[in-house]
Length: 226
Image 1: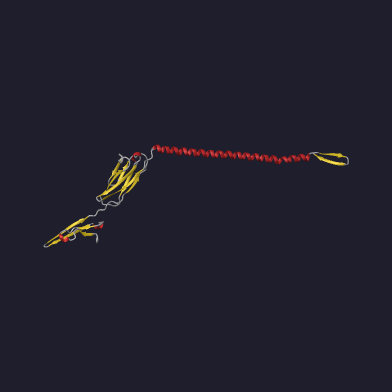
Image 2: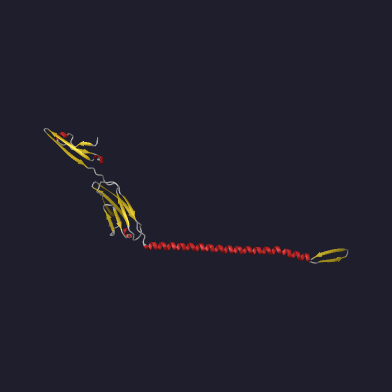
């Protein structure tokens, strides 16, 4: 404790031996004795110093599923501090009044809200107090989803799925029709090629079987083929 203890009076011989301890810590908690000696009398006094620690910074959390009509619990906990610790909750936005369906546990630091609705959403503050100080933390309780919103979401998902399914069916149908037309076009082209390939053979056969006419002229032989 060197450097942290000093006499209130510069000279305690004048009758005041009070001392001041600066920057008190938990280790300073102990019994202190004051010896007063004035011949022929001798006196001894004892004083107990108790050092209390203020609460540490609390942590706020939300427990429970955030849905319309469900129950949720807001928790607040300080890990250090001189007992007893007392917890209080307050709503610090909107009407700044705790919901009628809320129950506060001042010892455990919980705020239980049953059957939550849109009126319960907002910012809440937890304050933990002891004999030597206080600390606080804040928590935002989001607005729960209403049944109408859930139904609208389900309808939107169903409509989106239906639209996607219709688009896929349309694409598959158009693809099949295009493939069918392409197949018919290729078949027609093959038939034309077959006709073209067989036509010259028929002409050649006719040419082979065509008769030859021979005309005789004076002093010349002329052959004409038809």
